[in-house]
Length: 540
Image (cartoon, helix red, strand yellow):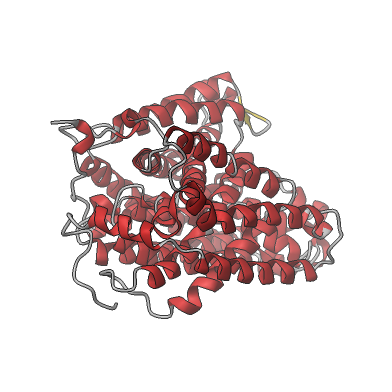
């Protein structure tokens, strides 16, 4: 049997899929996110997590209908192809894959950075000034190889190991928050005048914190169960259960952790330098030591290996599916997407991702820099979800939908506005650099079309022009935006966000009108042979 015809096995239960979402969301983000957000926004960081959770959940809701409608591995990078054809599809797939490629190295870096706090002499030299040393890079490489090996034989092994790890990952953050609140909570930290009060850096800093401090990076994990929908049992029920349940549960954990971190910070240190001057290598572990909770610090040092590893394992699986999706769309050689004839996993994609992820690790051996890049890249990738979901309501109105999201005509445009604001809040020049990086997908598309004799190219470009133009225009708006978000200051603060919202609504409307009925038909035809892919239509 040819390995290219092997179908993924539906072995992941709804509960395992929920743990996959939790395992993706609660990774290294909980170890560093509260600290980074507090440095950027002060006590108002609590609102940053609430805002981030609401925005990301709204975006995620649009993907639940798509994930149930097209339950396939790597689906996050394929929906734009089904709604708007290959040109928009390659931009979405490229962005989705880029956003996941750097996550395994981030998780490895997080583990190694906390390991540097161990008492063993060899651990002390793993990190210097927040950056990995040669020995730290070697240790991170070993972690990433382990992530790959745990996914190499079967997705069921991945799901089982991830379920065990996720249970541990839930217990330790909750225990940490409760202990910090119980033994070292200073309510006055939330309004400390010497540190600038509740929002010492203004609300623009809160918005930037949402986009770049690790909040979007953390909630990015909602896509894992969608990318694994092809291996999920009863995807019409299990996908939305995992996405919504995972986002809400993890969001509550993160908000509690942020409250605990702010309350546990040393008031004297805040009075001396403010929130922006806080310095921690292992934030929660160092707070535990300062409070005399050595047992908790030891637990945190252990969890710093287990928690990021769970996310690294998860994203090693889902990033391989994203790369496989690019191959299925015809933009990579066939060997990349081959599934193993016995175990049904894309081994070649995993190995290629490992090599490229190691390159990202060696270029950016720093958690904060990688987290910011991933955050912007994933939000750019999420732009197509709301538009695709509503477009398919128009171009494929009678298609069976295991989940028909009520309120989608209202939720989808709001989600697109939210995604656009997140891109803008991530600040120039980072957002501009990422949008231009995503546009590298254009020459990839053109090369493939040239090999195909430019078949239907004009129709493809017409259907995807809205996304291409949006990325260019948003780059220019970010460049000329308010200084609060790193721009040239041509647009006043407040007016800039209003302009972004208005542009988002306009491009959303253009995107709806640009839907490709032929692409929708091809997508549905591809899934018609899978009884689990398109079950009986019903509302949920």
